[in-house]
Every structure is written in structure tokens, then in C-alpha cells.
Length: 230
Image (cartoon, rainbow, N blue to C red; front, side, top):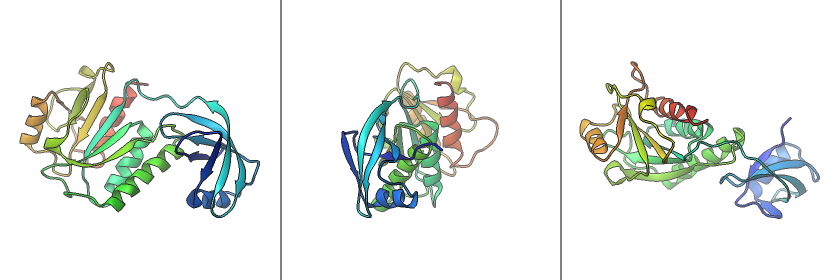
């Protein structure tokens, strides 16, 4: 059985975990002397030893550094319109597993919501942390607070999922610069929104002949991107 992994703020000779993680280690029936793995969410990972455990905290001693799992040649950002219910949680979880380095939430014309509360944003960030731990990834993507689409700026290449486009992702993708993929809400992006993005250098691409749900499209686009960078 693979060692349990925990997220820490930074790798250090001695590390302390708070009550939440300490309780989880109790549930797993770990004891002083057991081995763990620690990662900082920025790509660093190492062996560690549990040296003390009670209800309030766990103490760890740093061990040998480990090689983290491979990331894409350039960071990949997933930009996604605000979705209703738990759809965003599902997108954040799967995007973390697929290798997104950053997740930018956007407010678009047809978005299901105009804002999300700090509590929901914090929950999405915890989901990203848990997904990176479960998927054995050493990087935890940032989940950034929503921005209006017109105010958002990206770095490098931007590919927009757009039904009806005849442009194929693989014909335009280059790993010479950071990559961003954008997916809209139920009902999609409006024509003026797409026109404004393409005028700024974005490429509208097809995801095939079918109409995908708002929670499926970003993952299909992200999967197509990261599969070319392995």
C-alpha cells in the first residue's frame, strides 16, 4: 500500500500539521515512526516520518527528496465560466487530476452565477488540494476568484471551445509558451464574447460534432491539451 500523502506549506526539517490532518491520520491508524510523503503544491515532494501525533497536531520529520510526477512542458490554465450547483467542484477536481496549473473562474454573459462566496471559493481550493493528493500530483493548481470576461487577461496561447468552429486544436498548439483553455457556461459564450477574444489573439476550436455539457467541455478541452504534452 502506497504511503499516505499530506500537503504542507513548505518542506522543512520539522513540519507541523493542524487538527484537520491530525484527525485524518488518527482515522488511518498511523503512529509515531510510520512513513508518509509530503508535498508543497509547488512541485516539491519528499519522504517524511511521523514523529508525534495527538488530536491537535501531528509532527513530521523530513526525509529523502522524491522526484515529482511529470508536468506539462508549459503551465496550462483552465478558464471556466461560473456553473451552478456542484458542477464547478467536479470540474476543479478533474482539472487537477488532468494537470491544470491554474483554474480561473470567469463571469460571462450567460454564466449561471455572477459571483461566488468566499466559503465556496475556499471549498474549491480544498478540493484542488485533495485531488492533487489523491492523484499523486506534487502540484496543486491555484483556483482564482471570478473575473468578468472583459477584464481577464491571459499569457501565451488561448484556445476557446466553440461549437461550429472548424479549427482543430492540434493544428495550432505549441508548447513554446503557456497555454490557456476557455470553456463557457450552459448556453455557451455569446458571439460578441467570442469575437472579442479572437480579436485579442484567441483561437476558437472544435471539440467534435457533439454538443457537450458545460461541465464536460472544459475537461475534454483540457484533456486534449495535456495529452499532447506528455
